[in-house]
Each structure stands twice: as structure tokens, then as C-alpha cells.
Image (tube, rainbow, N blue to C red; front, side, top):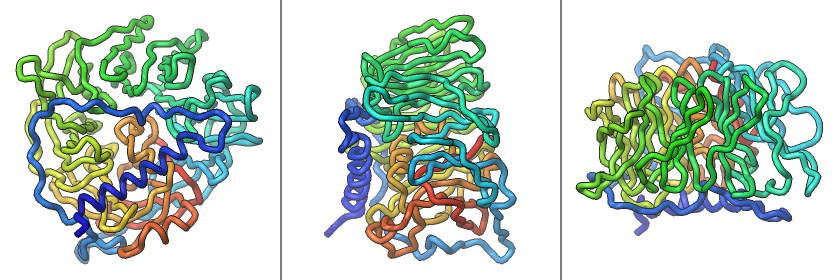
Length: 466
């Protein structure tokens, strides 16, 4: 008999293998290196209660196109949603569009391959890596453009010699804007493999090198002053004001990826080892070095703060070989636990901008068909929104969501919808059928009666922050 866990492991393993084949650049003269696929070192975990046996097959109450909402329920309309969507076309161009599919604009004129558009906090500037030409004469740069305005600028010009070193498929340069939009941190290929740079756009000095070593992940403090880097198993604090100063922190943990900052203060969130017990947990660490345990960690852990700083969503997985989480718990900064626990096999999760909802992706009983769900923080209720097959690039976003949420947002700025790339799958529709469709940019509203609208054909899509 095939168990739900076996079905899930096969589904995720196939998705990951597809992503790795794409990332390794087969067919290219220069083999690529994907930093984020480096093996993660296991560590002694704090015991985590194993969820009861789960039935991950589709439930009659969670069909892709049905809702349990009562007769008074209302339907959101995509033409009323805020912001704009940047997306990558099937031929690797970048366009922007309104959430209802109107006012579709081409952002990248001329030849070249462009992907992974990153909105700046102002909601109009977009950064994106560009590869123009081939071989040693190729122009591999990080460009910027203003939505609705012709022309591009160069944020960073890469060395063609290292063009084969990719952070992810079609992603030679990975930027994350600081919250104030005046700086960006960048992971890119270089002589030391993957290298981390910080650039203050207010001066003409150009990007400054701050770290090397893979795998590497980072996040900005809410004040835009500090960058916290998790490289290998070590943590590095980068102070950018008044000049760049880097400090190695006395903590080590390799069983997770992206660190976080508490949105309410200059306080870091990392996994650390208790010297007395030898076990690992999610800790708050302030700039003075004082720490406080929030919740126990597991062999596979990921965490994200709600924008309000009220709740930390923590995904914990028992088996480090399975790229997903057996449960997601919500913890307050004081270590108090929210009454609701998501006890399903969760692949990824992301907070709404207003902190009222947590969108999360779970497996179904069909290979490569996954489900969008939403947790209402106030009521503690959860609902299935739709079932889908993610595009290959979208699978990479889902696999490393805890880093990509800081650069490539899927929520509308008014917290009423999410955007994703792939295809919609009804109950009983297998990935072998759904995957044959052209990847589409799909807007999914999260109201009482969810709606789905295809706004374009594309392999990746991200919402502006305003």
C-alpha cells in the first residue's frame, strides 16, 4: 500500500529533481552551480510531537472550485485589487499587468533573457537579472526599470566568467531591496563561488563585498541598517551605517535556511544550540548578544514573522530528507503558542501584508498537484482555496520560500489575493495532464468565495508591494 507520506515524498522528490535539472544548466557550455541545493547538516533537535497519520488526498469539502461559505458570502473581483504584477513570459521577457489582466506592458525591449523580477519598496522600480549574448562576451547584469517608463539602468554588471554560477534557475544575480529602498543586498557568482555584496544607492561607491560561502541566505532589519547573513552554518551581522562593518556571531546552526528579523525591533531570529542541553531551538537574539528561546527546532525548520511582529510562523519537519514540514505552529515573541496548528504536510507558507492571514501550500493525493490554503489568524479557521500544478520556476520559489518572500512577494498589497504561475488542477486531474498546459499567471482571491483568473501566460509572477 502506498502511504500518504510515500506519495508526498515521491511528488516533492520529482519536483526538486526537475528544478535541479533546470538549475544545472544541462545543454549549456558552462555548468551552473546552485548554492541553495547544498546538503544541510542535520543536528540534534528538540523533540517535536509527530502529527497523527494524515490523509493528504483531496477532501470533498476542499474541491478546487467549491467553498463552504454561507449564502451571505461575497466574491472578490480582480479588477478591484491593488498593485500590479510583474511576470516572466515563456520566452524569458518581463512584462507587468494589472491584476485583472488589463494594461499589459513589456518591460524588457530587445534581445536577451530576463527573469525573476524584484519589485522595490516604492512599487514602481523593478530589478531583474539579464543575460544578453553568449560566451565570454555575454553581458550578465542586474538591471532596473521603472514600470511604465522606457529604458533600463545597470545596478550591477557581472563577470561573464562566472555566468554559469546560478543562485537558482535563470537567476545569476539575486537582489533583496532594503525596506527603505535605498540599498540592496546581492548574491552572485564570483571567484569564491557565491558571494554577497551590499550596495548603498545613495553613493557612487558601487557594491561592497561582505561574505562568501554557500549555501547562503540573508534578510534585512526593518530599519534597513543591518543585514543578517546565514552562510554555511555560521551567522554574520553586517552593519551598513555609517560604513560597512561585519561581525561574526557566536552561533552555529545548519538545519535551516533564511534568518529573520523581528519587525518590531532590532532583534534577530535564528536557530541556536543550547550549550547545556545540546539541543537546538528558534531564538531571539538582540544586538547585545542576549538570547531567548521561542520554540524548539526540528531537523528541518523554517520561520517567518508576520509583518506586525505579533506571530512567528514556524514550520517543523521530522525527516530532514523530506523538503517539507509536518506542522506549522504560530509563536508570539514571548513564546506563547497560537491555538491553531497546521498539522499537514506543508511545502511553503507566506504572510499577508496585513498579518491577518497565512497562505500555505499542501500536498494532495495526486502527484505534483498541490493545494493553496489560507489560515485566518483571528478565527483560527483554515480553508482550501484551489488545487494547482506549479511551473518549474514556481517550484523553486516554493522550495526556498523562506528566502524568496523577502524579494519576490505573491500577496497583493491589500491582502485580498495571491498570484502564482502554473495551471489550475481540479480534483482528480493528474500532473501528467495539467503539466501539458502552457504555464499561466493566475490570480487567486482569498475571500469567502475564492476566484481564479488567468491574466497572462508566464512562468513566474510577483506582486508589487503597493
